[in-house]
Every structure is written in C-alpha cells, then in structure tokens.
Length: 117
Length: 112
Image (cartoon, rainbow over all chains, first blue to last red; front, side, top):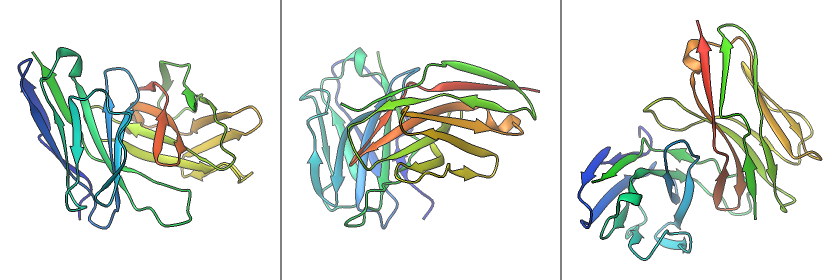
C-alpha cells in the first residue's frame, strides 16, 4: 500500500456544475477525514468516517456538500451546484483509531485542487 | 473552541543554520497531542513531529525538535542544520479527538 490516494488531482468546472472527488485511504485504516484548504490557510475540517459511519458532518460547509463511505473503504465527496467560493484544495486523510487511545496520526493524500470558473 | 495560532507568515534561514517556528494554542482538553506538519510545494502534507501533552520531555526527530511549554500553551519547532529540502509550508496542529485544528502556516524559505 503506497498511502492515501485521491482522484482527480485537479478539477476545473463551471459554476453550477456538480463535482465528485474520490479518496482511497490506507487499507487498514478505519477512519477517513475530509478537509478543505484555501490558499494561504491551514486545512479546515469538513467531516469524518469511522468505517462506513459518518460520525461528524455538521462542519460540512453547506447542504451542497455531501460525503459517503459506503463500504468502509474508499470515500467520495460531492459538491453540488458549485460556486466560485468552492475553489480550494480538498484533502483526504486516514488513520487507524484503536479503542481507548487518544493519539490519532492522520496520513494525508495529495489533495484534489478544484477550480470553479 | 480550540484554536491554533502561527504568528509568522514567513521565515527565512540560511542553509545549515537553525530556525525556530512559533505556535501557540488554546484548548480545554486535559489530554491532547500537538503536531507539526510540513507541506512542500505541490506535495502532500507530511507529519514532522508530534508531542504528547502529558509528557514533560520535548519530542525530537533527527534535526527537528520542539519546545513545548504547556503552561504557556506554546509549541515551537526548531529545525537545526537547515537543508534546501526543508523549504515548505509548516503547519502546527492540535488534536481534538477526531479532527485536527490547524494554524495558518509558516512559509519557510531556505537561502543557499
């Protein structure tokens, strides 16, 4: 396993179109996270999954954003009716969370850079 | 709410010299972790070093070390013998159970 992968690496779309990004985590990792990173800023947490359960989604930026992890492996992040303000890097990370531990090292993918024209 | 602040948008250092990047944080958690991540241009985020809050001893990883001052909520990163490959954005982050809270980053420039 070579780490977290994301597809596509770059996406250019027109305002109003829907886009979907995919993330493949490290195979044994049970947690998967989505972040958004705008230019010159640190990542901003969006949502996360433990296996197939989405345990936190209140930080998704609007109801245009949704994420799935149907089989507890790969995940998709969809943005409907894209707006220019959605232009950013979308990062995926995964971790192995053992019960009773606090430590949570997240391994990041290369990101998908979205440009909305 | 947890916050992480990096007050240095950009730092530069001469190759082979030492540089310190600053970070302060605020948390109500009693047990937490702090991290420094590196993001090279157009490359993915990589963990540089982590610190467990309940440990007094400062973490060290080769040329990278931290100065963790728990009472002051300060967590600085020292890079010794800076190399050209250290040029990157450096982000400080704290672990809030399931998510990382990030600072805005410091751009590190290495002068040859």
